[in-house]
Image 1: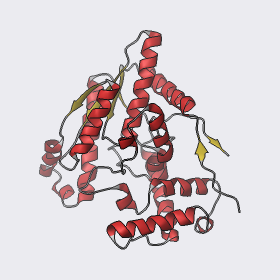
Image 2: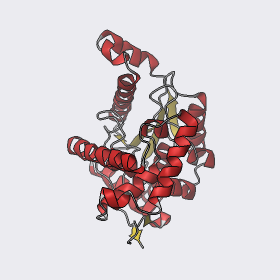
Image 3: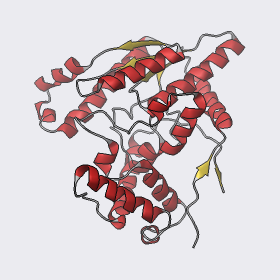
Image 4: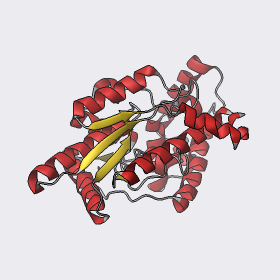
Length: 299
């Protein structure tokens, strides 16, 4: 039986390709650089580290001054450790940054959208949209463009982002990298391992984690999406090694953390990813920020 092939990359080559894409996009619109929202997670940290490395090299060679500015925009839901990790990163990168709580901005919407505060899901999406508004306005007033921080698994795999929220960006530098490859790139760029190994969370709901929401992690997402794109059917994937033992292990892990999972079989998880992927493709038709073409190899 054929196996699912996962992509490999040369970090130096891919970082250069992403960097060239960012530079070309910035220069094309006559911007003075980029702004990026920082959460303390691996995706935003890697995006910032990539752009910062690119701008430093470009500025030295061209005697220009393209600038990256980081904005840390927490609410009461975000942990202090998240803000501290983000601040540690910007200090290590030596970039200009600002920290602003957006809690009062979010709460202001109670006067116009009280229904959004009845469920954590809607309030979380509202937070994401408010944050996007702040970031895009910061970019506009500084003649900079907003760099997104979504990876391939989230944006194109299962659509795990908020339309007109964290998906509302000018360009998407790491959109071609799976979560696995983002972590690999992060280590290459010298991002702290504490950030690299953090449990992924959108930080939009109390106690939220991506694994808790989904019932599986991004290694499973990557395998399933790659399998589908390589011609495997859902039925074939449901009996495929190493996918099956990986999913079964994650079901058991979910049960140990949160009790009985809603997705309690390999088939249900594969179907869920497949359905979410179709939703993701629908989202792409509405908002599709440009992303770089990068060199990946499949053995």
